[in-house]
Length: 193
Image (cartoon, rainbow, N blue to C red; front, top):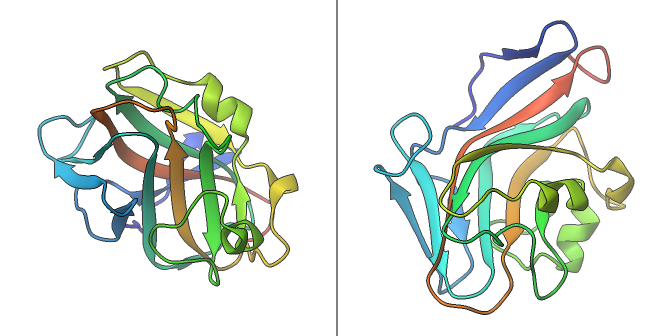
């Protein structure tokens, strides 16, 4: 759930906005046939985290209740834990990261390489996302910059509606990931404050 309150992230230059505290499954979905649950025991803070579980790659997709202006967004921060140390850094299709998408992109789950998603989305810096892989079974707060050079032709930064996490495309059984406290960091003085 979005909060109206903005929390200072870096003295004078940054503002952090919570997009989802991950204390509810509302508006979260995953790859069809995979599992998704609210985990009230393994969490970083609050009352829960979003758990996805499957064999192969994962997708955790958040459909924001209303659109939001990301014109001056700089990065995405989230808390992450997985039962493998390759959840973020290895994918079969070569698509691992976060896509921020505006109205017009597919709601709910879609493939990371979906043409419509690419057209209405912008990726975070993929190398940074993969480089911040936490050790297995260890919570880590991860911040990755938005790579504005990868914005699709129809992406509208003033009408962002979706945040989609992708990773772990290598074969295997019993993969589990948890996401908690999804935040976006905004730079003051650029775009709209």
